[in-house]
Length: 128
Image (tube, rainbow, N blue to C red; front, side, top):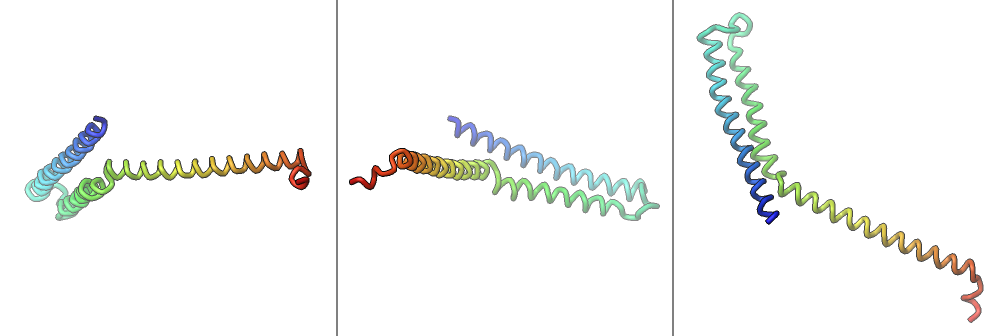
């Protein structure tokens, strides 16, 4: 049941990411037309830079491409499943380290106990 909920949540998050990307694209198109109209028809900023809208659109396109890469490349390969697998790997690795440390501590305690016995009874092993 928990796994199904997790799958549903991951799917819902992916849909939200794609929805925001598509909204960003529509906003980019409408905004680009608005910038062109501002520059060419209303002559805003003509005395500063003649075709400033081109630079604004190129910059905005760059940010949209970054958003696209984030949604369809980065999040796809390093999404919830990837995070979960990496977490599980790290947990297993830590559990193995803990088991090794516990084994080492047990061995050291055993050796220390044996040395204490030899210290208290020094000639016990040579009398036979």
